[in-house]
Amino acid sequence: MLQIEVKNVVKSFKDVKAVRGISLAIEPGEFVALLGPNGAGKTTLVEMMEGLKKPDSGEILIQGKMWQKHEHELRKIIGLSLQETRFSEKLTIYETLRLFASFFGLGDDRVNEVIALTGLQSKQKAMTGTLSGGQRQRLALAVALLNHPQILFLDEPTTGLDPHSRQDLWYILKSLKDTGETTLILTTHYMEEAESLCDHIIIVDEGQVLQEGKLEDLLDENSRNLDELFINLTGKTLNETNP
Image (cartoon, rainbow, N blue to C red):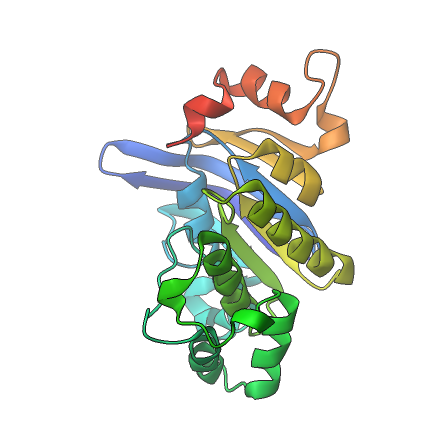
């Protein structure tokens, strides 16, 4: 069974057609990079897959189930980390994770596991208001991983991080990938991140899929790397896509 199936999905906001009949199929255990310029429709598409927005038409199936009928069930198998995740600055890392764990009926053992997995042991007693950008992103990832998600959505998880913090987060995600138990849908503006982490690349612009597949299958003599492929398809450079 497919992990995620998107069938001819359309979504508009007033006069703007954000998603124009996109269809996708994502296999269990795949790490998928969803790339596109700002305004390409990728955030809207991901929010529909996450069950945060409803399509105007078309269908989205998560493990063969629809959000409209199985939301409670699907929330249990999904983890997500938004770009602007905010936490109570008066709680420690441990207290924050303990709070979120309680929503899933999870105890201290799982909290300690995700603290170790995300390398936050030395900071677990620190108030979240004192954390660096990299530490905040690791905490956001720890929260997203609490419920052993079968599907993980990460929205630009390393934007604004220094190279060392970015590499730390990549290491955590590669360790997760090695288990083969989690499907990842990643939006990013860093081509190196997509190349390093993801098996499957989907490039979106103007609400449509321009190209998708394994990176090695997408490259040719005119597009020798993902950077060149992106520019050739969208007509934009990476700098133009950044906010």
